[in-house]
Image 1 (cartoon, rainbow, N blue to C red):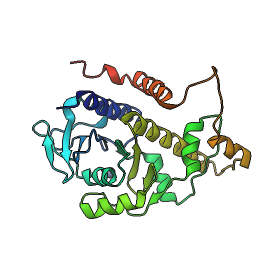
Image 2 (image 1 turned 135 degrees about the horizontal axis):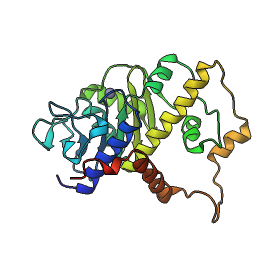
Image 3 (image 1 turned 60 degrees about the vertical axis):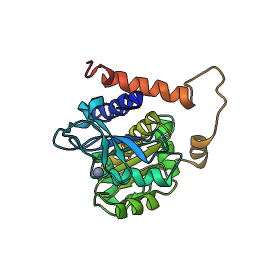
Length: 251
Ligand SMILES: [Zn+2]
């Protein structure tokens, strides 16, 4: 497979999400679009497929925008939901990576029809920010397995970077594999807290100034964690280390 570094990284993203138990059983996929040639690399399905947590670079294939495999090993085929990825890439040229997984807490909250609101700040501002921006909930519970459904879903997502799919899962977009993966982890964390708050029968509301603090840019100088690409790299390093992801399949 060409683009070896990206292939390695898609496999690593799958292992991280799988090992954090952010999907149901073996389901889900991560994709990456390297160029503008109407193709993407994506975690495969098919007779030889493995679960997300066991994904090896050899489980990643190249699929064109007709959802056909154009590169990859025998016994591996394009996911049925390749249409979900390819139509988002077609309509969002800035998007480079997409995560689609089936996290249980997001499923339950999506079905509950409760409004997702941020309830904390300092605990984890990055995940609270996602809820503050609003999480659209796609109404249809069926899989996105043809062009028509892919077009409809991309139209629904519009300019958002996250979506909960009622009775199904979540889709998260990013400008890199790390960006989409860490955003997916953050969405799952925020929804997990919202779910547990709902279980104890309470929700809290942040004050206006607390809400504003989520979006304010602060001059940190030489203190605290870094933001941007460097911050993302350190978060990625943490999850890779935590899940032992980089130690899988050493050969
Ligand atoms: Zn799905």
